[in-house]
Image (tube, rainbow, N blue to C red; front, side, top):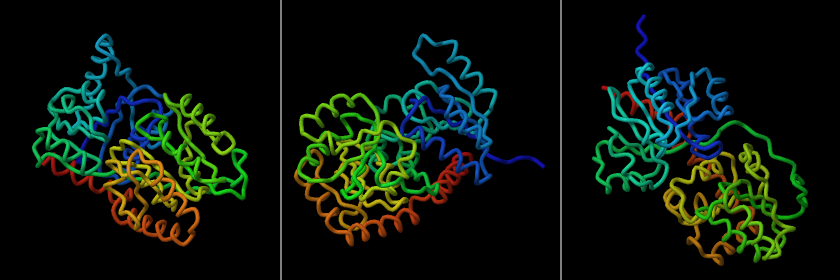
Length: 346
C-alpha cells in the first residue's frame, strides 16, 4: 500500500538551550504521535536534542550551520535535504532560513519573534506564533493569504512539585518563580527592583545568559542576596511552576511568551508585563495580571496583590487552565499544523 504521508523536513540551527529549541522537539514529537506526517530533523549537532528526536522514532541529522566559510558543511546539508525529497521544508528562525534556498518543495518559515524579514522573503508560506508577528509579516510585504497564525503548546508532561525547601528556601515565605534567558529583553532587572518592595518573598530565577553577572551584582546592590536563588538553566521549569505561588514574566520584548502557556497548563497564576506576546495572550484580571513594561511600582502592586489573595490566585489559575486546554493544547496545535501542511501541498 502506498504511503501518502506528507514528508516534512524540520530545520533548526538553534542554540544548545532555548524555548524555541525545546518547542521544536515537542512539535516533532506531537506530529509523530498523530501518525499523519513523515518527518526528518535537520539541526545543529547538539547531541541531547538529536537523542530526544531519535528517541521519538524520528530520523535526525546534525550539521554545523555555521557562517559562509563552512561551505562544505552547507553543501552536505543541502545534499541531505535533496536526498530526503521533502514535500515541505519548515525552517525555524534566522540561520535555518538563510541556509535553506527555495526548491522543489514548499518552503515554510516559522517566526517566533519580530525578526528582520530580509531573511524570509524567499519562502512560499510563513507561520507566526502570535497574531502580532503575523501582522509584522503582512506589514513587511508578505501576502496575507500565505501567512498563518499557529501558536505554541506547552510541555504537558505531568510533573510533581519540588519540595518547598529546595535551594535552601524557607518554607514559610512567599515563593515567586521567573524563568528565561538572562538577557536584557527579559526585564529581570525590573523584577529584582520590584522584589525590593515585596518583603519576605523568595525568588527562584531559572535561566542563564549574558546578563547573569549584571543581575547578580544588581541583586547584591539591592540587598536581595538572601532572597534570590539563581538556578541556572533548568529543564524542569514546569515542576518549578508546581512549587511556586506565582510566576512572573517581566519581559520588555516577548514574541509570544510560551512561558505563559506553560504557567496555564501547570496551574501557576501569572503576572506579566504588557509586552507583545503576553499582552496578546492574557486577558488582564481573568487569565493573569498585566502591568506596563519597564515600570516597577505596578509590578510590585500586582505581585503583592496575588501573594496576599489566595482566592484570586485560584481564580486566575482555573481560568488559565481552561483557556489553555481549549485553544493552546498539543492536540489543538498539532491539528492546525497537519491541516496547514495538507492545504499547502494540495
